[in-house]
Length: 66
Image 1 (cartoon, rainbow, N blue to C red):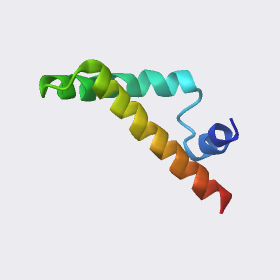
Image 2: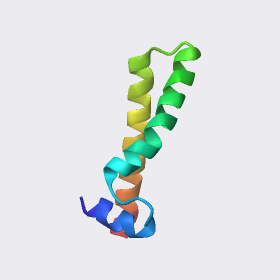
Image 3: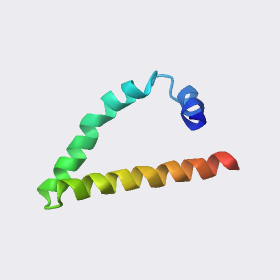
């Protein structure tokens, strides 16, 4: 949770996680649609997006320690 609290001051336009999701969900769905149109199974495409997001979170957590 502390990562979210530290992130918010850098992005004052994002007042809540729900607002962020509302803004980003259509873009993620577009990426998923593109992946499916290229022949990737929907669940596989969603898992890859989640994996990319997880890697990004881990990278951020390492940066916050130093």
